[in-house]
Image (cartoon, rainbow, N blue to C red; front, top):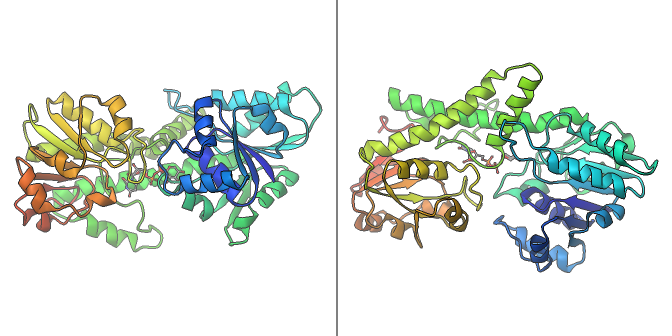
Length: 436
Ligand code: UDX
């Protein structure tokens, strides 16, 4: 099937490459000519494990193409997937301007029946809005359908999440369009991936509600961790015991400095704004956001437990991205915690395997180091903020020799307290400080 994917960010690029992998002929479109030139040469501008290989393979085999010509891509495609940005407008609402601009351009380029699909996370009611824009602007009586098909990709695991999703959600009222989309997703149908066929509004809300619920689990376990430190319990054991209940499940019960990234914070705020606009206050989602903000400040309290006066001290930070296996620092807790450390007068050294270039643009005053031990050299504390695999087996004796004051703050509970202390370190973490 001939399809067009509009927008070559995390979602658009993964979607386009994976649909090409399924055997479709895919044109990925972006207005950023430099980005398209780079992609045509097979250079993928984002860090996403496996994406380089799948893009280059499908480019070489002629199923995947990159272009800045939106009209031409639309004219030759049966399905047009919108994967452009819907960033936070600043008041919690998603900025729909890119979606609306593409909708208008699609209206002008309609040369036959097409299925217009929203892949980006869009507010409930977006499909209806897109339909109106195309109806108002199309120059011919050509028919089209609009569908919502939200993605559930996790950064760092996006290819796997696309090729082996828990479910495919299709929101559409038009049987012909539903049949076309089922055909597009046929490779997943064949591996018994469950499909949810519903209305566009329900599909759009499934996305927001899913992200907000996952964020709720994170904020909930962060609060339980904070309580554990007051009651002398061990949050790892508490979360393990909770997660064995199949109604709860073990995932998203790891405490830390709070959730970040381009989705949870934005989507939680958008859902609250959407509900408020409809006259309903989402008390739990509001609390999830507040708890998340509080967790950044509480992370700083953990550091102050070992370094009470941060002024003129050197703090080493491991991890800058919002999670491992990505170079994405959007709403990363590490960035927010470093800003607070600098405001308190500390000098910050940092190491991250993939995100230092991105971080330099927002935190030029940080000293970026070539590895974990260089970051720890001469520091008054080492703070583990993002749990990259290579930070899980640090040579603690070597670190002990390099660091000035033997303090480790483990915001992701990667290490066992007694192991770290046996090397002469003082050690604090999240939700285990009075249990051991
Ligand atoms: C999320 C959703 O998982 C995905 O389905 C959606 O499409 C996009 O948003 P992503 O933002 O890439 O994916 O990362 P995710 O792995 O969900 O983690 C989100 C944040 O929660 C990260 O900052 C992570 O560090 C934090 N987190 C996650 C925790 O603090 N504890 C956990 O147990 C899990």
